[in-house]
Amino acid sequence: MLRVVKNVGHLFYRIWFYVLVAVPIFVFIPFLVLTTLSEKTYTHFFWLARNLWAKPILYGMGCFPKIFWQQRMQKGKSYMLVANHTSMLDIMLMLYVSRNPFVFVGKKELVKIPVFGFFYKRVCIMVDREDVRSRTGVYRRAQRRLNQGLSICIFPEGGVPDENMVLDEFKDGAFKMAIAHKIPVVPMTFYDAKKRFPFKFFSGGPGRLRVKVHTFFETGILAEDDKRTLREEVRYVILNDLIKNRPEK
Image 1 (tube, rainbow, N blue to C red):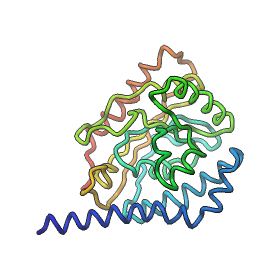
Image 2: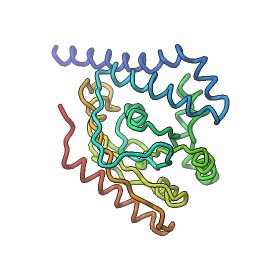
Image 3: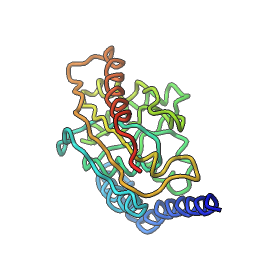
Image 4: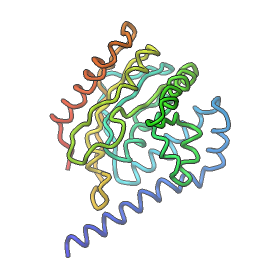
């Protein structure tokens, strides 16, 4: 009986999440459409997404972010933002953490999500990992966005790892791109997102969402051959931190 009650609670928690995701989109859809008509208005779209979408979702779910900064980002500077990826809350949490406008690089498949997919394909850099031309085109589109003063965000695991895995292997893309464009890599550890809202359906619950923004990795003197070393150094920082700090209850 207790399990049934818990499962009902988890079901309503999931439904509430999707309500919180959808309602701001429908309420502010005229402004969202206007701010996605041109890349020049992207910073306005980012402000709306951060303040009128991501924050209400996190607070509405009872998930209150707490950020620990080892180094802070400078206003107007471009960065490569990377973090472990275990929850749909990671998208909202990344928007919460960074005041610097950034563009997500993400899977093409997300375009299929109703309503969300419409805006996703207009503002994100989409990649089809099975298509070599698509992967190559990412660098060209990222360069254009960096030239506009934006940052880039990639979850370097390339997908969501197995539920029991602490941290999957990292793909090269984020680090190759950071070196090519000479921008600092900003590693972040998301400690509690998997605990609060995992992909496993009948689980999760409200609580604190801790994030650590680690010391940045500079790439100014690095060459493309250094991408694997950079990748493993960044992964070690996040993995070591995840092992030391368990999710909060």
